Image (cartoon, rainbow, N blue to C red; front, side, top):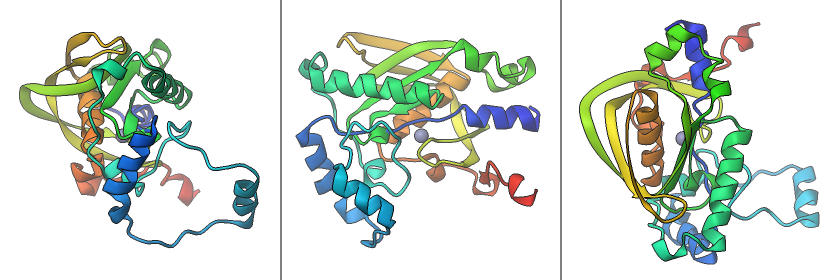
Length: 241
Ligand SMILES: [Zn+2]
């Protein structure tokens, strides 16, 4: 894998974000995560102050991705009531997640990343992103075109416990990347957006995305699994120019 191909691959590996679709979700965030704040100090510009006076802050599901430090990213997400999947609150979360994932051109997203601490993840690897990667890099990374897949209350089973070390990044750790070991092949079972039971086996890059997104549902970030010596600012070269 060439460095340019790797960089391209990292830039396409934007996983996760969440928002709360209901008041119960927001309560969960506050009660479970409020103790996680490392500092109560909040620094805002005067412009931000005026903006908030004129317009109330957004509420989950956000149209942006929560960044590391946000307690919602360190919570264990709650299961979704299957009877609520067809309802407007969950459907709104799903639509928001798809919109955010496609706008940011990331290949996977979890509900906690848009501020919603529920066990929901999705992934998609469209043709336009696939064709932007050189063929040799596609083979090296195990890339493949993937349609949109949505899993609620997903369970992961390891099919091949050998691990592959590859560079990945996260929309919630914006601007950085690191090599992370992941299982070669996994199987995910859960409910789809219609509440139907679905199972899917994945290997290569899709398996990596799945494991990354599953981690988000348990409050785990790639930072917790990375080879720390490979951790880089993806724009480090620009700082020397
Ligand atoms: Zn992520």
